[in-house]
Image (cartoon, rainbow, N blue to C red; front, side):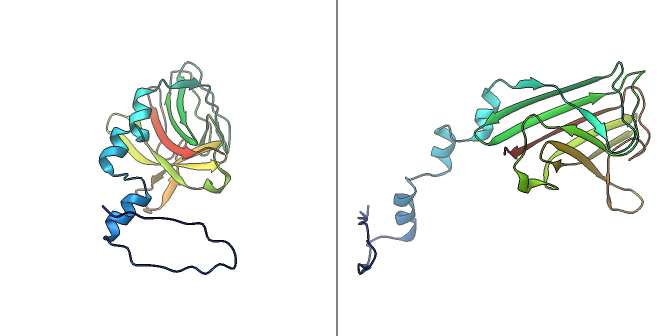
Length: 187
């Protein structure tokens, strides 16, 4: 095994490089503390392993639109999140009831923790929605503002992305649901 000796260089000092007996992989291993796939996963560094073993916290999700506001009525709206360092994992479930009104415009959901400001319009997750038997859709979840997310689905006519809301991709009814989840960097 090669030994690497590092000495601080001060301004104005000459730096002389000498050959090192060893290949690049050996040098890289020494510099990065011998991290590899096995000891990253076995050493508890894996975020997905940590996320699976931690207790998620519930939070109150605010559901709005950029048009006429919806009302959950006797439907259900739940949110859960887990924050590990600056990573925030979240999931939201909205199920319509017989008295749910869907509003107009694109659905907007609150995040549990504000996102880093440079992530606006960034895809951070996915969703699945079911409006009625046989009408299942999937798409992306993206950060709309630092405190909210919206969903986008591909329009079957134009092929372009369109915001999910009442009438997009089709009209919502009692029993319709959407599950969304994602991960992002906290502010």
